[in-house]
Amino acid sequence: MSRAADWSLYLVTDRRLTGGRPLEEIVLAAARGGVTAVQLREKDAPARQFVELARRLKAVLTPLDVPLIINDRLDVALAAGADGVHIGQSDLAIADVRRIAGPDLLVGLTVESMDQAMEAEDLDPDYLGVSPIFATPTKTDTGAPWGIQGLAALRARSRHVLVAIGGLSHSNAGQVMRAGADGIAVVSAICSAPDPEAAARELKRSLSRKG
Amino acid sequence: MSRAADWSLYLVTDRRLTGGRPLEEIVLAAARGGVTAVQLREKDAPARQFVELARRLKAVLTPLDVPLIINDRLDVALAAGADGVHIGQSDLAIADVRRIAGPDLLVGLTVESMDQAMEAEDLDPDYLGVSPIFATPTKTDTGAPWGIQGLAALRARSRHVLVAIGGLSHSNAGQVMRAGADGIAVVSAICSAPDPEAAARELKRSLSRKG
Image (tube, rainbow over all chains, first blue to last red; front, side, top):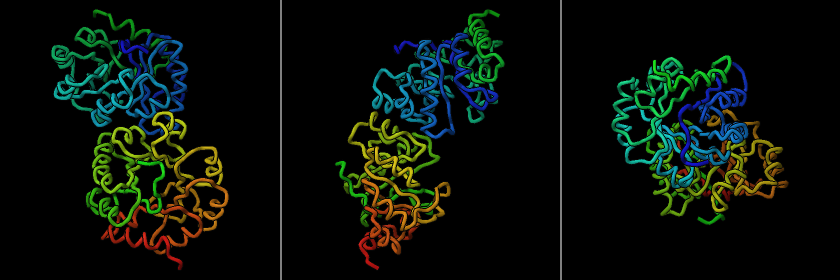
């Protein structure tokens, strides 16, 4: 997996939102619909189960050349042969991740404020997860929303790839991209969709929509 | 740190039991009192805080040549430069740990039944944590207690170093050692003690006690 990944349409998983459908099924459909990266987020799964699930997703995604990113747990990412890890402000430090895993592992970092984003100017994440753009019911432990103006202000000040997350759908994705995002990350817009492939396809189209 | 560690008196931490005293203070006192290994167990701490705490304990323990083992999170162990990781049946697989961390990291494995212990005959842990020997209020998600007879039966069948844990104190440590344990692990017997150094010293003496 090259370090130059495509973050334009990034699926972040939430097994609670799939309506009982297996995550592999959702992820495969989403990748067929145009998702360019997948983050496996498991807040409660024991590590062994987390690794097993990651391996199943990796097997689905590798043939489609879509990178798999693991939320928080670098050890799970390494055990499963995932392509990267996504860390929050209270997870491992990027310097520790790089030291343990080397330069080839993709590393994403959540920033929830301009202060955090400016601190990240001295770090070397592969992208910043700019969270949340809008208020969202999926994550309730987040900071104040960036909004479109906050995202545009960050775009003007950050050298990093910016992936917007939080409350995004096909109806606002174009606006978010025009404000300077390099990509959007979605959870419920795909995980909860009756047809995740169609949902991904609609999101993909909306990225370049003008209206 | 050599692979031939001394597991005879193994402190497993629980910050809820220290009565507000800093964990470094408990751990330093315990090491001075004769603890031969320390496991940092943090079930709820975010990874960054876990790493910082591990580094503080490592700084305390390294001068005393006492190894620091991290519960569950291999990534935290690697980030903090700890000497080992302790894994349960639902944590990472030993083979994955060895593949990621190499042969020098100490690896302990919890076994809660004879079946699990016999499966471990084909694995290469540095020790088995035989849990629980007696019923204990510290951990409530454990299997049925091994008891002294179960421990003796395991000793006869296992090639591994056996560290007994669960309900152990200076009053039963000698009996557990005579049943075949290579060491005992304690939580509350040291973490909750008004004088952790004296508690460790008393436990140390009790390991060779006949009565």
